[in-house]
Length: 300
Image 1 (cartoon, rainbow, N blue to C red):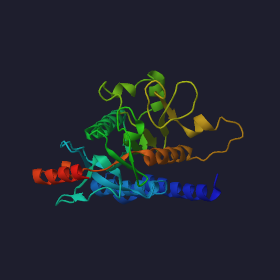
Image 2 (image 1 turned 180 degrees about the vertical axis):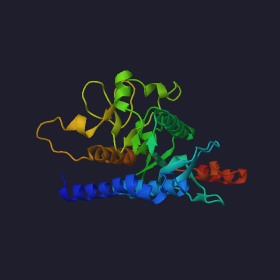
Image 3 (image 1 turned 180 degrees about the horizontal axis):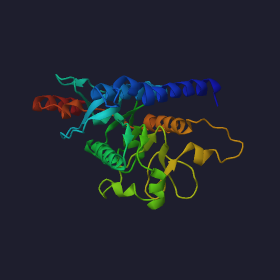
Image 4 (image 1 turned 90 degrees about the vertical axis):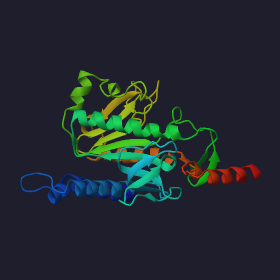
């Protein structure tokens, strides 16, 4: 364990928590506690999250805000934070400065929220499932995969292969309901969020700054996993640093253990997501351009 890195990380997290919870409210709430300039408030919090993530995000990846598009004309709802490959992503902007990201080069999506009710959590999870499903639009016929800036030819299957799915996350200030009580009442209440069609596109992690971290486990050992996998890591678990960790004798942990764990798993996940080569002619309307590319490929 590197004390230098951990001290830097703790300092970064301390600043993040203070800005997310306190400073952002003082800047964008009036004396009556009402939100002013909600658009700027959201942008400010998204920037705070991006700055924290930058410490554990590979340099080849970048973050932005906007919409994800596919070759078959599907468009996501607006995404708070899109993690994308900076080297492979074309700059697509409308005249209104709305940004669009081809699904092939998107590694992950993060929803940034304030205080979340149970219904808001469910709605956000459903939204992320639909976004994660967009990778099914990528042709699976021998696509070219770029990973760590090296080109590899692999079998691409976002339904079966976890690394071919984008990561989906929620970061919020706190839950406006007792999530532990919800789990005690119905341990499968989050599974019921997903229809059979969306069952393979479950979220990766949900971080509540005040409460803890939603992850998965195998139902036997309390070893956490940042993704759902049928038949293996398919049980929801809520990791509260006080309740789950400090019971271990002689173990001294940070009060931000859940945030550190989130950042650790985020790094592992986002680093391993397959980045696809964009066949730009698939996005273009010109038949002649497509014919030129086809002819070039057949001559090689």
